[in-house]
Image (cartoon, rainbow, N blue to C red):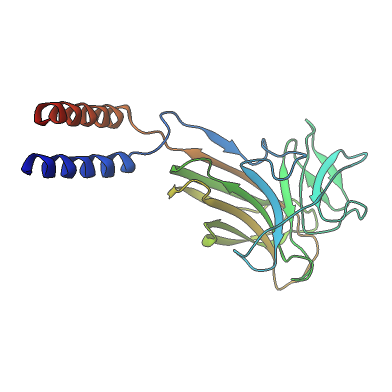
Length: 238
């Protein structure tokens, strides 16, 4: 009876330990600009708007290419150029200008909405493909030549972890790399909203990456060793 209790106890401890070291053996990085796509959602990325910060996301349903600038847009009214909220990218290898904004080569940007009816916040959401630890970092930059003025946010599982204000053309603010433990399907939102100034000249660049934190080889070896010990103990006490 005692040996069975010991076996169950060790199995419980081993299971708890293995849960603690869940994670990839090598690092993977997801880049928001590089991952921009004509599909939405494009796992692990989704583009949309929300009326409440951290609220439910309404996916953008319209994708189009604005010519001759070749800017790629996601919004909810492809027939209305400049309709916001939106997410868009300059895929060209040179800077591109449209209206009062100028986007550097390969840059990703988003623009908030006019009010809560249209979708006040524009969002770029990432979903964790597996449980593990992830490093999040982001830089927000004003790309409107008339002077961007927006509030920007980083949310993890719907909770605001960072907020700041972008105030001026080429003005930028950065979210320092921070590690979070996420379950499979856990979310990271990069969001932009209008300030009290109102809605205009609010194009905001977003350079963001999320990187998995690999499990150290020594920890994996320790876990394997514990599995081996448990197996030997089981055979010995059987």
